[in-house]
Every structure is written in structure tokens, then in C-alpha cells.
Image 1 (cartoon, rainbow, N blue to C red):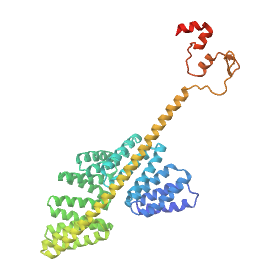
Image 2 (image 1 turned 90 degrees about the vertical axis):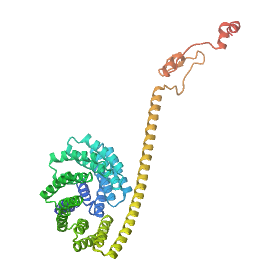
Image 3 (image 1 turned 180 degrees about the vertical axis):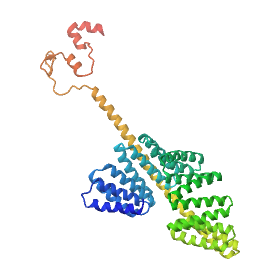
Image 4 (image 1 turned 45 degrees about the horizontal axis):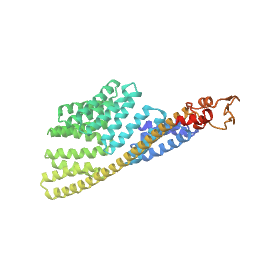
Amino acid sequence: MSNKEIIALEKELKRLRQKPPGSDLVSLLNKLANLHGHSDPREAEAYVLEAQDIAEKQGLLTEQAISYRILGMINREVGKFTEAMSYSRKSMEIYEELGDKNGLAIGHSTIALTYRAQGMIDKALEHYHIALKKKQECDDSREGLASFYFNIGACYATLDRLELSISFYEHAESVWKKSGARSHLASLYNNIGMVFGRKKELDNAREYFQKALDISDDLGDKKGSANTLGNLGILHQDLDDNESALDFFIKSLELYEEIGNRRGIAYTCGCLGGVYTALRRLDEAEELIMRGLKITRKLKIKDWEILCLGNITDLFEAKGDLQKALQHSRELKACLEEHLNEKSMEKIAGLQVRFETEKKEKEAEIYRLKNVELSRKNDQLRDALADVKKLQGMLPICANCKKVRDDDGYWRQIESYISEHSDAKITHGICPECIIKLYGKDFSQEQE
């Protein structure tokens, strides 16, 4: 969405704030929060907390669920994965209450993204597949399914299950081709190109990168074009075609500079410096690598700092300046050790989050099963009570003949009354005392 569109939405927000708060205001606040979630988490959080507060007070459950989902996304962006998961599950609980399968599909996808951000790809895949199934149950059009195919394909690519990855990417491609979603297709073709690159099927990789580039150029998407040109540069480096790689990297750098994308500039300068070194254009290489290193350090992107330090070490070695090569080699070693420590800490933090999440999931499942068992026992008890006929209260009985008086005032034999008011079956016999009364003592002795 362009800045003009965001400005228009913020203008509409001012107008709605002059009225009593309602669903329109909540919806717009959530929309703005979602738009700012990746670029400005603090501003996004301010919008969504206001939306969540109004939605809760007015009982707007769907908007509440959306607010919780956005809060999950914001916390994921800043690395607060436990909080992200908690908000996502609150959102899912509301969608479950509403019976909203589409909301549940989006909720599972959001949880998958949180797992993916922690490198827990197996768990991410589990939730993506659930999301896909939920989406299939509520969406007849295949258009809504394509993003799920795309994300599942990306997960399989991360796991090096490349054939499965391409299979899901092709599902997404067939949908987006029919719908004409060309910007989505450009991203997809870049991903497919990278998969073929990892398979060393470089002609196929080049074909898909070219498809992505043609679409981005046609749409005027300069960032997309710059990204694909960089991918083509890397591909030609792998082919030892440094002249072609140089051409692609230069074009990529020009586009990143035009749109002011510092991350793209830093990375491409590092790559270009490596190509210039291979072509023995060492002064140009030094200028570009040092520029990339300076920006990378400001942005604190360790992976790219390592790339630049590796390339500048190679550069000074090629120049024969072994002192500077050694100096940068030591910097590279320290950066690698720091990066490995950071990665280890991230892994530990990820494992801790995973442990806490799985513990909560198990506790919730135990609680659910206990409730299921309790409900079953209660049902059994209700059924048993329904089958039981009780004799209760004062029961008038004749002191002489032992007849009982029923609710209608009639005197009845006790046997018939008990049979009617309980499940007891009456059988007749004669007790020893009555035998003597009726038949005499001698008969009683004969029975013994």
C-alpha cells in the first residue's frame, strides 16, 4: 500500500474519532496496525491496543480476534515469541467460539509464521497443513489457498525437501496464473529459481529468475527487479561467468540506490566487490566492499558483515598486502565467533520457547481430557439417575394389614405400590415365624 493510501486512511481515522466509537473505528485501527506491523511495530501496537480495548468493551468478537492476531504478529517481529504465541492462541479461541473456519485457517498460519521465525520448521509445517485444510473446508475458490501452498513450499525448501517444495510451488503457480496475481508470481518464480539453483539445475534456475524479472520490470516494482537481478548475479557467479554476474549486480545496485534501500545496497556492494576481486579490478573491489561493510555494520546485519569481511580479506591477499589481509581475517574470526554465539543464544532461546509452548499445549490437552472424562462421568450419572425410581417422603401404612395409601388416597397392597414406584421385582416367600403361625411347629421342623 502506498503512502498516499496510508495518509488517506489516517485522515479517515480522524473523522471516525469525532463520532462515538464503533465497529468502523475498530476495523480501521486494526487495518492501520496491520499495515505498520512490519515497518513500525510501536505505532502498530498503539493502533491495535486501542482497537482491542474498544472491541472488548463493545463485544465485537471478530475484531477482538483480529486485534489479538495482529498483536501476535507485532510481537513476532520484535522477537517476543512467547507473547506472540499467546496472542495468536487467544485469537484462535475466539474464532473457535465463533465457528469461523477462515479465521482459524489464518490463526494457524500466524502460529506457523512464529514457529518459522524461530527456525522450528517442522512445527510450522504442521500448522500450515492444518491451515490449508481449514481453508479448503471454507473456501471454494482456489485463490484463497495459493498463499498456503506458497508457504508450505518455502518450508520444504528450508528443509532441503526440494521436490516437495517445487510441487507446492506449482500448486500456487497454477492458482495465481489463473487469477492474474502477477506480483505474487514474481515472488514465486524467484523462490522456484533458488530451489533449482540449489539442485544445480542452473538453466531452470535462470529461466525462472528471468520470468520473475520480466514481471517485476513490467509492474514497475524496482525492489523486486533489484532482488531478482541479484539472484541472477549469484547464479552467474556459480557458473564462473563473472562478466555477466558483474552486469547483473551493477544493475541491481543502481535500482537499490534509486529507491534508497540500504539493506540491498550493503549486500550488493559486498557481492560486487567479490566479483571485481575475481576480475582483478582490485581498487574498485576495495571501494565497494568497504562501502558495503560500513553500511552493514550500521544496520547490524552479521551475515552480510561476514560476507564483506571474507571478501575484503581475499582482496588484500590478492593485492599482496598480507598485513591488512591478516587484520581483516582476525576481524572475520571475531565476527564469526560472535555470530555463532548469537546463533547459539537464539537457538537456546528458541528451545526454551518451544519447551514452554509444548508444556502449555500438553497442560491444555490434559485439562481438556479431564473435562471430557468429567463430562462423560456426569452423563453416566445423569443416565443412572434417570433410570432410578425413588421411594421418598412419608409413606402411610396400615398397622394391621400393612396396606399403603397412595397419592390418590387409595389403600393398596404394598407389593403393587413398590413395583410401581421402583424397579424392584417382588417375589413371595414365607418367613419362619409365619410358617409356625400358619402350619404349626411340627411343619416348621419338617421343613428344616
